[in-house]
View 1 (cartoon, rainbow, N blue to C red):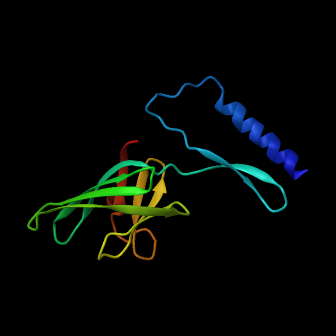
View 2: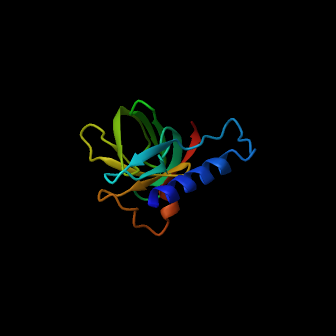
View 3: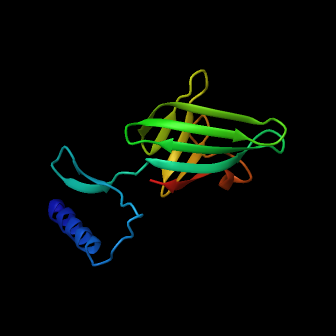
Length: 149
């Protein structure tokens, strides 16, 4: 019985997706995967789309701010450019590999602690070292917005 319900629900979702609504070419739909459980039940689930170029400005020490541009590639490589403004001006470019698990991107920069980002719709949310949202009075400042795919 559960298989019939899941199958009917999947057909309903597929029919709704083909309802004549045309997406702009710049829009990207999330890829899906069919998951099969040990009991043989299956469901179609969305896989977060993580690749693209993200940008945001986060607070630094004092009144300084850091503009971060993070490029995540489909081949699990990244490029992160940081520009610190204010009294301590710095420009750094980091490259390397990243991993993703449970919608959390982990970036390991040589000789630094890992950096974590939660993948959400068209944005990455910077997480603390315990993989939790940054506890700050302005959590919106820890968001990198998607610029392009």
